[in-house]
Image (cartoon, rainbow, N blue to C red; front, top):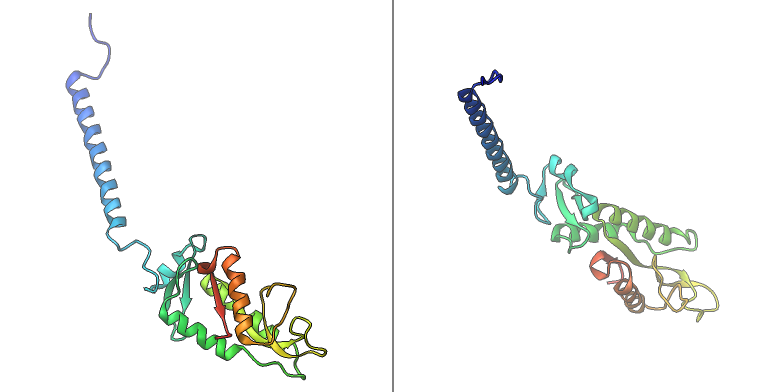
Length: 194
């Protein structure tokens, strides 16, 4: 009986060999691609590392990664779940000093507005939750008959208090709040009140 298949045995062997060579080439190119990923050039830079524009735009906020722009335009990687790099801490301290104001009777809401603006901006650029301790008008947990300059925060001070008499007490209450808040202390940044 004659084989009606037009492909001869040597041709089939050549086709099989070509297929195997192609599969091997694909496997090798996949290994090369893995090597490119594993060589460090395409891995996410360490926290605090200077970023190129391409690296900055490729960071994943869902992974807690942000590109923080320093005053000189340099962008560095920060992660919402890790400590901030020293250069970022220094810049956030500068922003805090420049933004926080002592309220006056002419602008009684100015201190609160400034604190909320600071918390929003620092949170947006670092991914951290931000609590700000600042001076404002209040009654110090009902101990004052008329409002005067006291210490408060943009987060809950607890015990139904919105303000307290001393900076130290405000800071202590804010730290107690952040210790129990979503993400725990590592996810929070407490500004002011040092």
